[in-house]
Image (tube, rainbow, N blue to C red):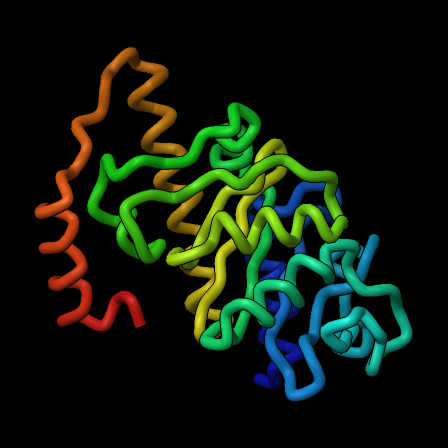
Length: 211
């Protein structure tokens, strides 16, 4: 499978899970010229490799005939700030998006939170979609992390690989669902301590889960 085919397959898989309603969300992979990103306003079921758009860090289209996703600024800002990132996945998955609309992140109620790179999944400051302000807010929320919620918007996850970024975006949705289930039941989650989290990081390191 080519990188373009893999990008489309990942987008379609997330769409099938209900993570990309109404053509929302976007995915990209890093390229030597910048990044290859899904196009604007095209259903993922109809997207073909030739529909993907390669953009330079300043937004200049260097490959493809369509408009890039409106969130190209967010993607290019992440690649500029995080040299280890090889792929970025942005979804509007339902539970994580619901939590983002309360402008709340996800605390360390479950050890899998460590997959996000730190002690929590932060929620960014609010900014209008597609703007430089949103890109800046997202990069700030991702400092020391690999995933974040975007206030009143959705989820962003990065990874060394597309598979890693996609898996992390899915895990953030799973954590959000569990966290909201606890709160909906009127239960207060018992949060992991710093020592407990450090033990998780050490264990994940042995298994290569945070690579």
